[in-house]
Structure formats: structure tokens, C-alpha cells
Image (cartoon, rainbow, N blue to C red; front, top):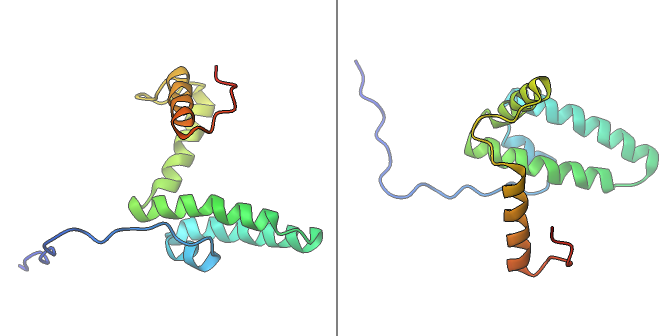
Length: 123
């Protein structure tokens, strides 16, 4: 019988979001999620080759930075989000514990007001 490996004493190292770089993003992903990223990456590159416009590549990298960071913090998050989305679409009901839309809007408006980013169109 072996003893569990000792846990380091002290604070855990900080986890930071990856750079908007395909290699950095991919390094944060599990193999299954990396396969999804690879598919989107190839499709986006093909589109950029045709259009000569890199904005789609930039958008994809920014989008996937968020997923990669979440996967670093809590592996499996990407597929949990997909499963939750599929359930909501199938049942047309928000998951239990969801924050109501009016409360989300109020929080967003409050943050915009605090940051002085609101353009005066608050509801």
C-alpha cells in the first residue's frame, strides 16, 4: 500500500489565460477538445486564405482563449457547456439555479454604469 503524494504547502501557482496563439491555446485543451479546436482552426484558416482577411482568425483565437482558460481551471467545462446548451434547446427551459434575464441585465447595466461605458441606452 502506498501513501498519497504529499501536497505542496503554500498557495497554488496562479493560472493565467493563454495568449491568443493557437499553440498556447491548444496546450490548455484535453485531446477531445483540442480536436474540436483543430477542426475550427482549419476551417477558419481556409476561409482566411480565400478572403485574405485575418479577422476571422483573430476572432477564433479570442473565442478559444476563454474556453482554454476554463479548461485549465476546470477540465471538462467545454463539453459541460455543450451538454447544458443541448438540454436547454431541447427543453426550452433554463437550467435550475439560473439567474433570471432581468437580473443579468441589471448586473450588466450596473457594471457598465460603474465603468462609465453605458451610452445612455439603459433599460
